[in-house]
Structure formats: C-alpha cells, structure tokens
Amino acid sequence: MNGKIASMGRNDMVERLKLHVEQADKLVEKTGYRRRSPEVELGYAALFLAQGDLVRAREHLARGKRLLKEMGIREWDFWVLELSRLSG
Image 1: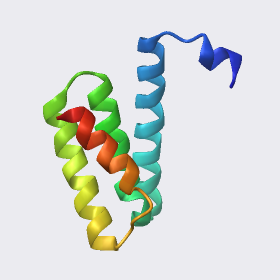
Image 2 (image 1 turned 45 degrees about the vertical axis):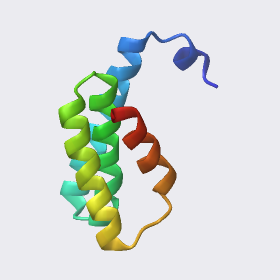
Image 3 (image 1 turned 90 degrees about the vertical axis):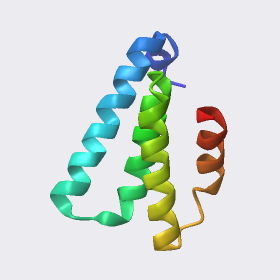
Image 4 (image 1 turned 180 degrees about the vertical axis):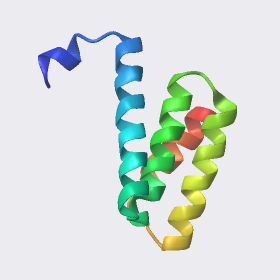
C-alpha cells in the first residue's frame, strides 16, 4: 500500500474518493462511454455513504443497480450487495 494513502485521515480519503468519482463521471460524459455509468453510480453511492448521506447513497445505489441489470453486468454483484447492506 502507498505510504501516503496509509497515512491519510478519513476526511482526506473521502475527499480523494470524491475527486476520483467526479473525474470518472466527467470522463464518461466527455467520451460517451456509458458502459462505465454503473460504476460511476456505485462510486457516488460509496462517496455519499462515507459522507453519511444515506438518502443520496441509496439513490445512486438504486441507479447503479438498475443500470447493471439493464446492461446484464454481473461482476459488481458483491459490491452492490455490500453497499446495500451498509446503507441499510
């Protein structure tokens, strides 16, 4: 593990997560590569969960689950279940 990341505080890690999710979202929008839209939604769900915003976390989780189902993508099943469990 990168020493810098291991020494980061929780708030810094949440800010880093926010930066990465927003960058991914912009890249999907810019390129039109919608195959990654479910992952962006799951990223937002994780971000809002980490920030304690369960309402928004559940909204993004629901969108991510819907997109995964529509696209027939199963590789994210574990993470969807884990986020669902954590967000109640």
